[in-house]
Image (cartoon, rainbow, N blue to C red):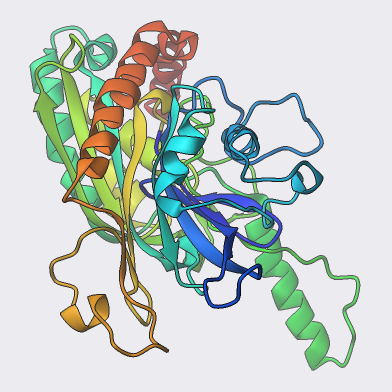
Length: 410
């Protein structure tokens, strides 16, 4: 999986995209010898999630391996973090930025790589500035075949699956295509209660509050039929209560047949969207598999996608999901992952010392892009294929899928 991370003052949190996190480093100022100044640097990284317990460091469980733990340890071994500052990643010092990826990679395992390090402006926030996210999902035809009823060929199922995917494109309420989070509805209820109390002149100090965070598909494994909880406060009179955060925009959702990926044919799904809910992509793929194999009728699929009816859809295995890229934008378009030839030249070349120049995190003129693509093809895709073959969770998935189908059509 490839991820985009962001760096804040005291914590690094996952977001979506090709993989970068912003951090600070200390650099000697040329005009004031001996004085150090802080600049922000974006690291474009890639990794596979196998063997790690997520991205973020778990400070209360020091023995739990995470991606951030490995990166922090590599920064320390590369001399970028003093021992006294090891717990504070906002205090990182290093030499020339150009040498930083090689210095860090020397201390990273083979399944984590830093590709580039680029100085960015201080206002850059990877998560907030990310306006486009690209995912890939790889579905083996052998797995799809295991779900086909007697008399249905896998070729027919694959064609139906690919035909179903574009129906997700557009703006939809994906309330049936995410793991429900009770506190979002509880938060809405508490806001309404607080508003009512203020109207009545009460303080409402005992109202519980929550901080909302965007959710991305985190690769958790769930039974196929748990994209929404059977009983929760989101349901009223048999239908789902509307929640604005469930409305998401899908710009592209298409599938193509890959005849040979590490020795086996796959359906390759490419998805592009502004943002995604927790487990949304896996629920989308699971629903498309259900339609393709006849477990879900097209009319029920449309009800799940286009109405507020509560419809259970299966959650596809996490093994096929890859977060491949991202696009940045804000009021001023100052950061691009790859070179955007549509970017106005006056952003790339500026003579105004008070205006931050446009930055490209991965150059297409040297080996940086080639290195990224090689890691994706030789490490990430290879691991995806291996997990589909060897995962016990994948092997057990068709059984609960059959139970879900039987319950749905009872």
